[in-house]
Length: 325
Image (cartoon, rainbow, N blue to C red; front, side, top):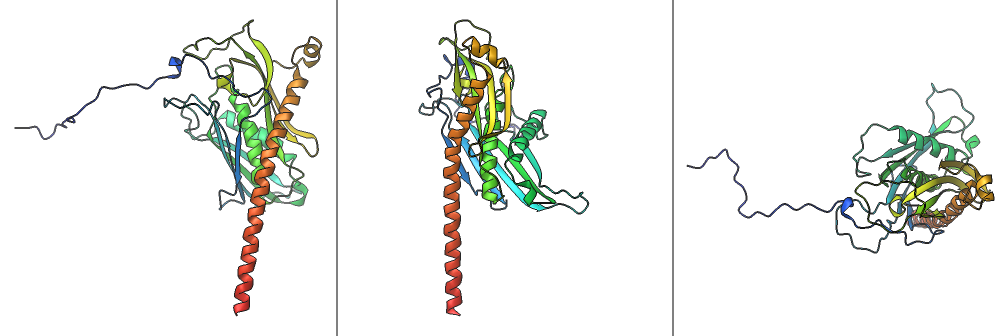
C-alpha cells in the first residue's frame, strides 16, 4: 500500500547545473567608448500622473552589442526615477519661511544591486540626498514661493555595485540623480534659473589585459597608463585614482555642486609635473555635464510640445461643445 503522506518525485528529472559566476570570466569588460564620450542616455518626463512632475533616466550598459549568456550581473546599468511633489503650502505649525523649503530623498530599491538592500535608509543614501539638495538649491527661484515646500524623491532601480575600496559607483548615481531631478522640476513647472545637469569624470589606470581574479582587487601598479575619462564605469577600468562629480549650470556657467573622491588634491604640483590634476578633472566633469545637457534639452522640448498639443486639443473640444449649445 502506497504512503499518501509522502510526496512522490517527478517521473522525468534532469541534473542540476549552475550558471557561471563573475569569477569564471576570462577578462574584464573593456571600454569601447572614447575617453571624452559618455554613455547613451534615455530620458523621459511625465511618467507619474499623481505627482506634480516626474522623470525617468536610464544609461545604456557597457558593451551593449554583445549577447548575454549568463544571469549574473556583469553589465551594470543605471536606472533612476524621480517624482516632485509641490510646491504646496506648509502646515500652520511650521514657522514662516520667506523661501521655498526643499527636501531631497534618494532611496535604493532592494533589488538595485547584487547584494539585496534593506528598506531602512542607509548613511550612503542620506549623503546622496544632501549632495542632491545642494545641487538643486542653486537652481530654484526660492523667493517666489514663500512658506511653501517641495519634495523631490529619487528611486534607484538599478545601479553599479559598490567597489571594495569605496563607493565609486555612488558618483555616477549622484550625477544621474541631478539630471533626472532637473527634468522632473521642469515637468512640474517650478520656476528656475537654468537647467542643471550632472557630470562625472575620473582618473583611471588601465592595466594590461590579464585574466580577472576571483575577487576584484585594485592594487598599485607601475605598468598601467593614466588617463582622463568621462562617465567612468567600474566594470570597464582596472583602477580608479580619483572621481569628480559636478552639478553644472551651463547658461550661467556656474557649478552648484562638486564632490571629489580620491587622490587629486595637489593640482598645482601635478600640473607642473605633467600629471593629471584637479583642474583637468573638474574641466572634464563639466564637459560631461554639458553633453548630458543636450539630452535634457531634447527631453524637455519634447514634453513641452506634447503638453501644448494636448492643451490645444482640449481647448478645441471645449469650443466645439460651447458652439453646439
